Image (cartoon, rainbow over all chains, first blue to last red; front, side, top):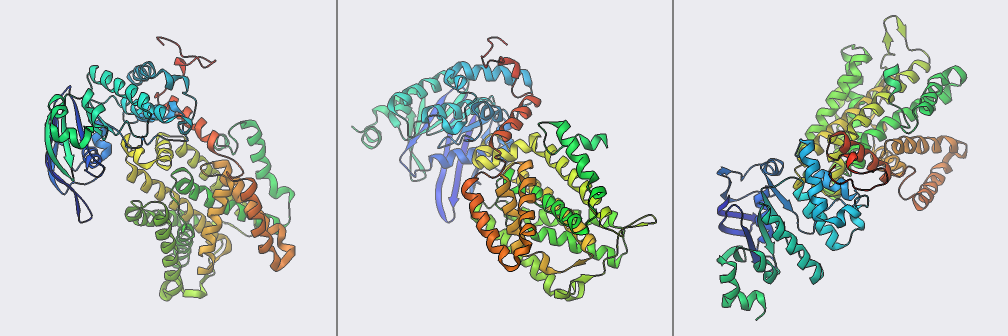
Length: 234
Length: 343
């Protein structure tokens, strides 16, 4: 479904991504794990068209999407939950969700979608007239995910959904991620919380300083001694 | 006229604003004093300027402190067209606006990639460049001596002699500006501008072409500032670089901020209040700017969101728009706020 081939990104003269290649197949949950500054979020930004590639190519459903504008990429069904959630703090929950459907025109579909999001996040329904900035961290994360779902994505990119949340809330969020996947949305998940990420993912890639240093199924990575030592705290 | 009446200052109560507008339209019949009419005309100019800046700095959230440059470009282009080509003001002012809009595009293309302080610095620089060009391009602008003798406007055989026709001209331009701005901010495009002002990255992530939206808002803003400049040139019949300084840019920004960011009534109120204070304080001669400064401080302390806080209004507008664009079905929510299952 999504393939990155030798993708390179520089911040100024500093290489942030050094020839990244990986694949996400339809229906999968794939996770990118790694420490701060490994380049995980940069990959998501590159996929969405929020930053320019220095080299390589990104293909999605057979078409090259690298070099296209972010607003065009989202129309193809790739939706991102940005790092730090990025909700519109002065707009209400419902307005945030409405903006998530910005690129869609079909009213009936959008309303059905809104109902699905409210059913999945009853909390958001309770607070739909409240402005986004007054929600708790977990609720804001739900709102960010809900907003991304309003675009009816085929591929959902999640950037650190566990960031700054209490362990119990993290668990809930990951349960929801799994459920979203089961309804047919492919997921690419960027996480520092490797244990949680590997517990829901099918496959994973481990990143370090702009490179992928190992990959495998989630089980393989959980059992990998290096990964254990570096990210799982054994 | 019925068409114009639809675009009212206060959209909560159309009848009240209609009466208000008729009163405004009748003012010249009651007030024969030229000075009062002059002040009203100036207020009209300020309203156009603050509304135009409000689109960029209020709704789109891009701090621009070089607005007087657009005002100046519009004024000079209109003045030159009328002096050198003998064009009618009806043609010269719109062309002035279009040329200014083109400068808005030129400035917007490179600068709209910048944010916050950087954008402010570049727009400040732009304002100074324009002022210095006007000051030094002797052959065209006559430098500090300015361009005097801009002919009085003519409509057929009717020549603008008193201040009253100018009053009606600016009145009509204000109405057009208000109507256009309302259309824009209540449209889907306006919604994307508000989203950009809230969180640009998130706006991009939901699929808004943020660069394009910002540049368009900049162009529209420049256009209306240029129109205001054109009218100013025609009205005063003289333009010089002194009228388009950094202080003028700041003054307009103050009107927008004190009126209430991202609010059309706010910008109007801001323009009226800040336009009137120096006039009311005129009897204090050189002390008046001192008092003006103190008043500004007081206003900021007691009304930090501006006279007409926009937050709630902005949301209403957005809800209306989302419903209009069929993004949110208000029918799925009952009047009591309950979610209707299966709706």
